Amino acid sequence: MAPGPRDQRFGDWFRKVVTFDRMEAISLTHSVVYFALLISAFLLGGPQPWTFIFGLSHGLIWIGMSIASVFAVRYGVINLALAVAIAVLGCVAPFFGSAEFLRQKRRRRAAGQ
Image (cartoon, rainbow, N blue to C red; front, side):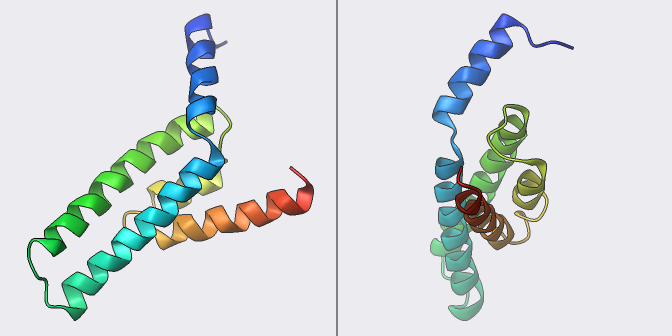
């Protein structure tokens, strides 16, 4: 199915707002939040409200990144491998998505993009 004018306008807007670098920054932030959750929950004995705050933040960031990655693949911001690292592996450990962002960024720089 060919994209209509409304889809084209949304795609143009999406590519301006959601960039590879912005998604990478959010992914790295997500990894820091998740690391803080692990420290809070396991090393510090689960102090409240910090464990709740970090846990809720991790969940909401993961949901947002997963939804954004579906559209980002659709509009060519990221590729499918990166979206899988974000959405599927990111719920268990967002470090996979961050590592994939860094790997793909190195590849892009090497290719001169």
